[in-house]
Length: 171
Image 1: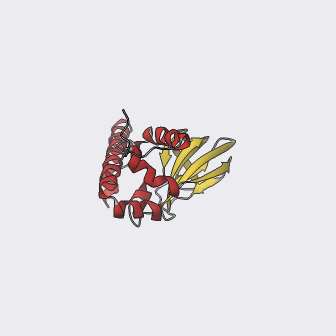
Image 2 (image 1 turned 90 degrees about the vertical axis):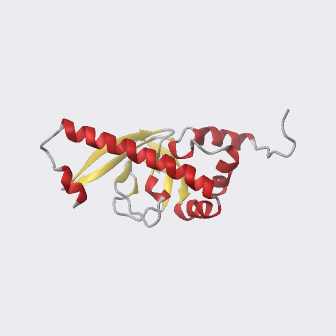
Image 3 (image 1 turned 45 degrees about the vertical axis):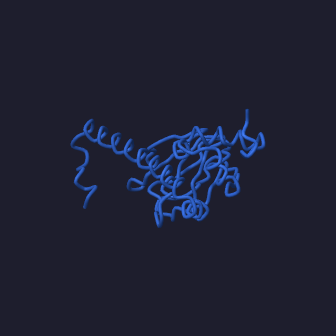
């Protein structure tokens, strides 16, 4: 039997919660917590070769991919080198969960079209300021995400030993 005092959500909201549940940074949140993000979400369409953001830009939003494909690239001398290809259900711009961060990569649309959900940094920070539990859950997911990336980086370094010095990371 359903609790008569519990909030009921529209089918579109429930569909959005199911989508968010599959995204690393939202996986620990309950529906009630995810609902806090709904008013802050903006749906945007992008086309092939459109840049979502550039490396070194201020981190002003978190992006969730509803449809399409995005390449995350880094600038290596005069070339863009792809570090990851993302598609439906993936998120990027994760350092917008942090304060005063700058983008570490460029995000480029590689599909004909991409439909993204954009959550502005200021809205995320507002939610974090009033909901420390949501912030703690999302920061834990962010820490796990960065830990996994570090493991990949170090594995890649071991496999390509000699091409770069890991000590440069800390200089």
